[in-house]
Image 1 (cartoon, rainbow, N blue to C red):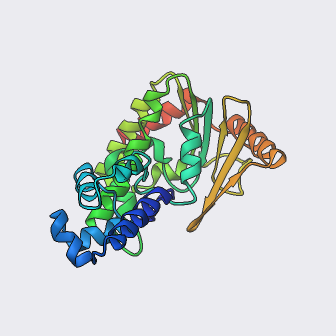
Image 2: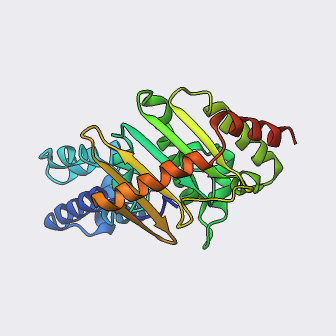
Length: 270
């Protein structure tokens, strides 16, 4: 999974800066909050890097804490990538620079291809359960990432998905139907290729698990793999080449894009 409710480094740094300035001026949080017209809870959440400071908070804090413009300048460097796990953030940045991106998934529909109802079904299965605010942050993070497919028309996106993932009715029949429609729609994009790995296949080159591969403008090839509550960016050239070889072999073992589309259409009809 590519999410967790961890604050980004920039949020924590900005929050620590606010706290340091507040304490320098001799305010407790309880004294500072009324001057800001924000709750003590909100002030604490921002100072601890758990919440993004909005423009109103930044302007008021700068005015109350000396009107030096320092907080206004610091806020320009804020980026939270809400809902993205700390181990996934670097990979998310690489995704946005990619010349090509290849993904094999055996657990669920790849995040870049998930319909919103499917996204909600995925995060609805979280253990422990997510609060409403957390769930909405995760949904927004994932749907924001999905803009890559349309905003980067010169990037080649390849996806190989296990047939079992498509047949699993996560969220129920309505969610599954919407997911199939969503996949079929994205398969019409010229820069997106989707292939299904059939259950009947006698060979499988990626039995070690899901993997993502990226090619960058400078020619570097990197990979990313993840498991339960962890992820690993693979920059070693030898290992990345091996994973690219496995993915290339898997593409030859999977259904062709046309046959994959036919399978999805039959499942949608059923």
